[in-house]
Image 1 (cartoon, rainbow, N blue to C red):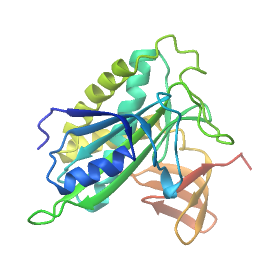
Image 2 (image 1 turned 90 degrees about the vertical axis):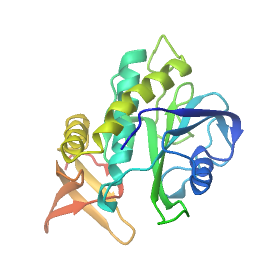
Image 3 (image 1 turned 30 degrees about the horizontal axis):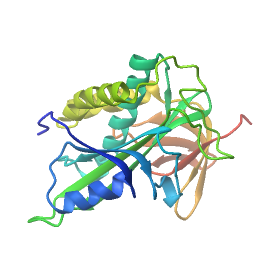
Image 4 (image 1 turned 120 degrees about the horizontal axis):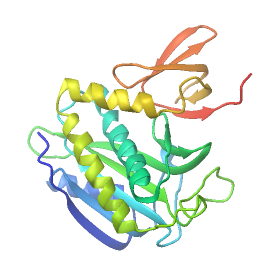
Length: 248
């Protein structure tokens, strides 16, 4: 069960906050270990894309989870952090993001933050599963050239206080992490994801390892998976890279 405390470790520069926590997890680091960096020299996004922000321009944070979840439910750790990030932005800077399933935080159609989860075995007795979830929140920098991104600065936020954002993020995450310990709580996280998700009702392309699924996103099911109505009938997608398409 979640104990409710965070151990925040700060770095001026690191290869990757996710990679660091995965290494620490194999050494037995407890759940609630948090890595925060001013700069990542080897930051990554989904599909192993390189993601390197200028020093101090983003909130770069990763969190170590040791959840007692079925493997099919581990993605809820990603949802919990994305929802917490959106709440922190609302509370601290008055910006109200929405979520693009499964792991982006948007304002309008522009990306404000991305979330990346990585699971591994910790190497200890029994080989417990650990999940490291990383967040890159654009504060002063809208993302690399060519990306449809935005930043809190571009959105006119008057307060760009990263310690306050981090504190609000971890406070919001504490409540959602506790929910993951029960069936009813997990349903609550899924319900919030559904309510905050801008993907529903949109025509989408979901890029999978061996195929693409194109259709209208109609539902997030009780497990938090996306249901897409295609020309061949409904498809349920548990993970994938989602692109919002123009109508028609």
